[in-house]
Amino acid sequence: MSGEVLNLAKEYPRPRVSNVQDANKPPEESEPSEEHKPSEESEPRSGRTRRIAIDTRPLAHPAYRRLWMGQGVSFVGFQVTAVAVPVQVYDMTKSSFWVGALGVVNLVPLIVFGLWGGAVADHMDRRRLLFMSSCVTWVSTLLLLAQALLGVHNLWLIMAIVAVQATGFAISSPTRSAIIPRLLEKELVPAANTLNFTASQVGMLAGPLSAGLILAKFSYSAAYALDAVLFTVGLYAALRLPPVPPLGVVTGTPGLRSVFEGFHYLATQPVLLMSFVVDIIAMGVAMPRALFPELADTRYGGDEAVGWLFAAIAIGAVLGGLSSGWIGRIRRQGIALVGAIVVWGLAVAAAGLAHSLWLAVLLLAVGGAADLVSAVFRQTMLQTYAPDEMRGRLQGVFTVVVAGGPRLGDLRAGATAAMAGATVSWVGGGIACAVLVVVAGLAVPALLRYDTRTATPAPEPAPAH
Image 1 (cartoon, rainbow, N blue to C red):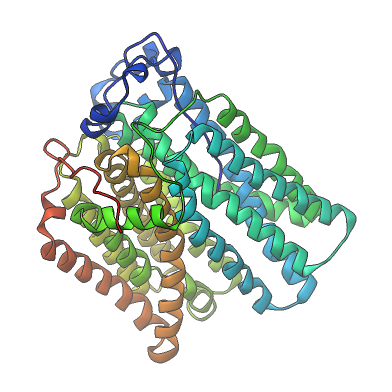
Image 2 (cartoon, rainbow, N blue to C red):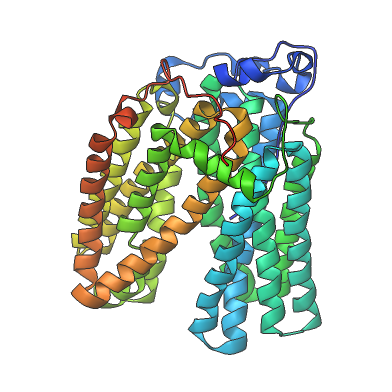
């Protein structure tokens, strides 16, 4: 998963981002730029359309607009490579084991460098870090292109390149997310996150479809070349950002201690902590992805069905994003987050009972729309509730949870199916998710009470010793 970019400059008063940020903001940063000035397009749209259609007001801000376009375009290319690499590995080895090993090669750098990259983002200019880490990802794509053109056919070389690519993404992802609240007013952050998640879901549809066509008609090198070209849009967007230096006084270095300080802060904030917990419940308990091949074969008619099952959640997320104008007006975001995950769990459970492929796809699409809503609320709570000094580290944790949760879900679904059958695993996971997230919300009432109008997070704690 990946693309990148964002920030500010001078002349127009800086819009409010959050009380915590304002308190720590140095005087010279109080006058941002033309980049941050909304265009006339940000005037209110007609009432009914605004209530339903996706809120595009953040796109009136040039810096954010370039970031969003760069991320969206480059993510399509990234998904092309995400399909091409496992296909090439299987073509070389004829072994699903080595294809599965790519998941480990991706996950380990994502965990290690996601946490470390978030800490670095709190200690240096985020624009600079975003550009450098994006360059790492881009160079990795060029190396994949080179090995394909030269016909190297070395499995270990591909594994090494994939690990480097995952490292670049692990650093750039939390950095990019931590920049967004520095570009936009607080009230526009939910809309910006909706736009980001919708663009990502479009990439998850367009990328694999493009990869299938390219690999069928051309070659691996053509797929990697397309990714390399599309990724330059993200690099340009990152390069055009104004500086995004840390707010306040930066102490220490971004090492292991800094990472632990992020966990220490998270442990003192029940709302933020529970936003991670409920996401792990949603993905780790209910995600049915690992069951799609078996159910497609035994219930829905084979290979053609499996493509629809894998696409269904993304289709729902895209449609949910396009009709998400109401999300930015929700103030009780904690209870809305729990409600969205309950809908996700119940929709997944219902899909597991469906014996019609199209009914299963429809129900999974409903779940995908609910998942997008929950993702927007989780990201928004993290970006607006946490102080800027902690945002990078917490976004690093967010990246690890988002990447690791579905993989835990695959493991849970496969293991449960082996013991009790695919239907029990699928339906039981969805029901268990809905029940557990309600229990989690009741156990920590602060999450259900969370209201953007009254939310006042604790300041950054003293460094952990």
